[in-house]
Length: 393
Image 1 (cartoon, rainbow, N blue to C red):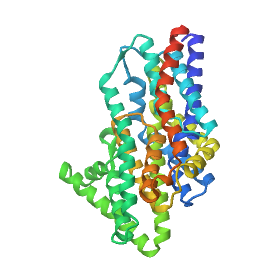
Image 2: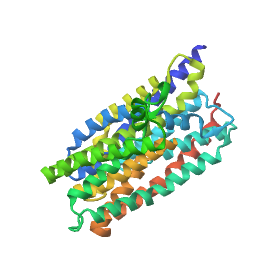
Image 3: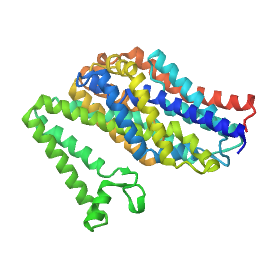
Image 4: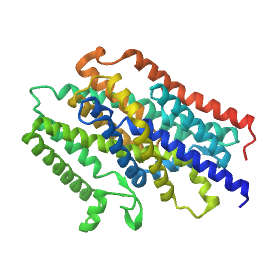
């Protein structure tokens, strides 16, 4: 391999690490625990520390789907060269850095997706319309589904007719059922990805839909039972611990989703190197997210926790349940999704359920939505223009 090519690979790797750091400092590091910080369930610095660890774990165990989609599923007919990867990551990270600096949540998934498509089309690639339709559907539906579910949960939890010794364990059972069926690296047959329910079924010698349903119900009952006992023993403490558990699951899911935005563009380059396993690339991206969470996330956590809505533990729980569910759907589909969009939409929905329009900063909400809308377009134009101006090869 020529020295110039090696140098390009190294620069692309550094750009990927920078992107991972920006993700950890921004969307992945800030949003999962922002509702918990807003509810005074955990301090800002401790939240940043915990989310970094969980983000690394999620990146290694769930990062493959989104990474493959970003690396090879957005453009047909061409593979991005190392110089194109550098352009993609620098544009995505640069726009994210602007968001971190100003305190407004730029949509990471929008910037990276727009950059990849812009570079790919400028290099002569063809659009992958089925994937675009899937991605667009998730992006458009996320605010309505996430905000709607959060609104519904937040509307029910304070009611005297729905005691929290029943409602909170029911939510815990739902989360446990989903967790039993999400895919993790190496849990499937022959080292493939698989679910906890599937692995448990194989170990017990039972397979099929009925076995999966039975194991899922057992998992839901177990998690719901633990939550019920905790809430009955200490209602305030039980709510706080359940909230922190939800934040941890969202942070884990964030690592599994967001690492693909940093390392996905690198994966096609591994075919030219041939000696670096994809799991090592995922781990490297996870480490970058961890460092970003520890060093840069507190500013964004404070912004989301205090500026968007004044949250208590119940509204925070209402925000995090749909955030976890949507994140896992995106990981399953291999769709790059913005955690800013997911969690901010849920925060708005849960805040509106109790406080009405006054619970949300309307001005900042408008700026945020504008930033989301502009993220994809600006990234696409910059990436396409960079290829036109610069000779990439």
